[in-house]
Image (cartoon, rainbow, N blue to C red):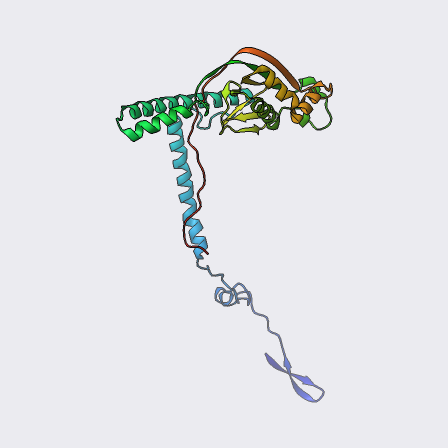
Length: 292
């Protein structure tokens, strides 16, 4: 407030600061209205579409997972839904062989039904084709063969040789090309029938490596690999001796650092069972349409 005080030149107006009393309301943040005017109250932003989706989707996912757990528990009936993994190759080979034997039995039963139905048809054309098929059974390997021949056994190097090697281990193992070379040499020698592991070899037989095993007609087999051929023994042995690839394999068999297994014996009574696998062929055909 302004106050007049005496001075050298008379009265002079002076600004005097008057303090409020103890009952006066101080200025500043204690006044709610005053504070409300200066404080900025944050406002809630509306949820974005993505946030709404997550808020709704998360409970649904949790409910779906719970439903799957309940269904799995009911279906398992206290057992493991996932079958146990194979811990050794022997179990794998045994199970694969059993499954293959079951399929072969089913194929044999179906073939017998087809043959019975075919013979029951009294049609001239059907009978003519049936006679032609019967003549092709033997060259196709569908007829059992017996007689003298040779037995050749191929096997991997001994375990101590394999474990002690510090180089490439492949020369110490039997591969598909080793078996194929022996089989081809036997065919060259005039073999009338060839078997591997007791399975008849036909024109559609596939031999390929399957890990440390050899797969024959879709079934993996472990070593040793027994190859038998029916035919003239002298001609078969001469053909094997003349094959360059087989000769290189036999040199590896005599090398003590490799020592792959090789054994050839003359056998006067070999039985080659008839091929009882699938005879139908699957092949690709070009698409017929407009040329580009």
